[in-house]
Image (cartoon, rainbow over all chains, first blue to last red; front, side, top):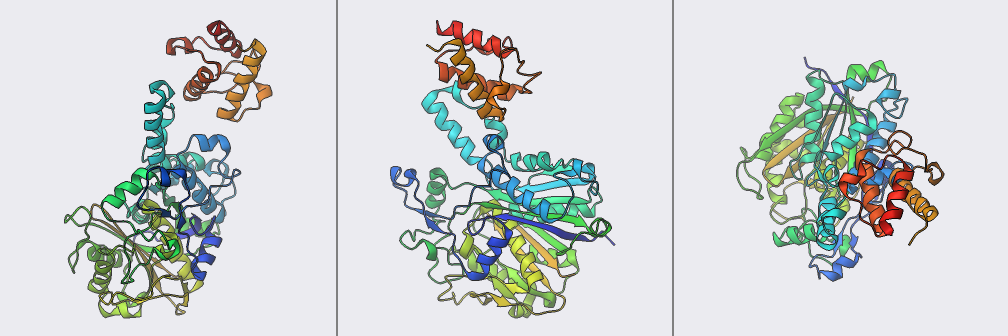
Length: 420
Length: 81
């Protein structure tokens, strides 16, 4: 029997909260983090999309002024979320070197991102054009590289077992759970800081996502723009932020007397090999296969699953296949699952989304309440799911909650948490 | 044209901005690497910021000769002339 992996710490910095507690409180209240973008570049480039879900900046006692200059905004969010999770897990020191209860060579990192340091990259390009090569900052490459966030978290906490970067577009954050689970199961590490981060609300990325018709243009009603599963959804809303979770072998967590939130019972990963942006559908499509793998990996019966944090981005083409995949994988048991689409409040954090939604799924399990799906006024009749519109109590007793993420490129990942 | 005192003060601000070191720590006799613990990447950032602040050019091959704060102050002072 492979080692059990448990969740012992949570961290998040999101458009609806500067920490886990605030994010969770607002997710239960149904607060939207989507607002009109007021940066001067919105007017300057006459952007067709003028809304987004911005995240608070990390406090200076978490990411110092000097450290901030050496980290892309996504790296700053990564360190902030990981710091909260680390503290929440109750380690005695600031990092593994100063904490007796964890061996730095047995502490790993799996921290995902969709794009990496896109602000750093594009700022450097602007500098090159405006001021010439001499002014391009020497820290540009380490700040823009996609592995920069995993590396920064590894350095911050002296994690020396490994520092890997799942890069699978919007599935990255959930893939981090899959990788973290297997790193601990394989015996390579006892503790893994998993997570995901994104800070990509830049005029270029807005223009690019808009060109592919992916974004909502509901500019006059920002808070109503992200509306997963609703018939009037017209695209996702870009968000930024990060989530982080401390995964730990059960043995290690119990030995140090850690508070345990839940078990990461299983995880699934698949590739569609179908279309670069459209999800594969049907019982053998990638999303359904990832869901089934998570069940096998965690020895989970569909009837145990009572809550789903759906990928549900609010795009016309994306939300319907997810409903189909859930039914293909779980059969009629899906009727007993309370499904929440929290991107309705946070917007779409791309590589950070799966990490934040994993945090929310764990809290749904421990607090026994499913968070809101706002803006669901007329549910798309093709979506045959029990969608939670206002926070709803979940049943007591043993249960499993899952979190899904599907990314451009046909990447699918699922994390399944079980109550302990 | 900045005086040597002004160059030192300006350099101290640049070092503070990049590394968080107190400006008082940046004294003429201090070595950038040994005393101030400034790595090569930070050093290049400081050089480029100093070029902009004092409107001088500090060639890359010259940077390795700027071992102490005084070396940098003197170089910038001469380059201004």
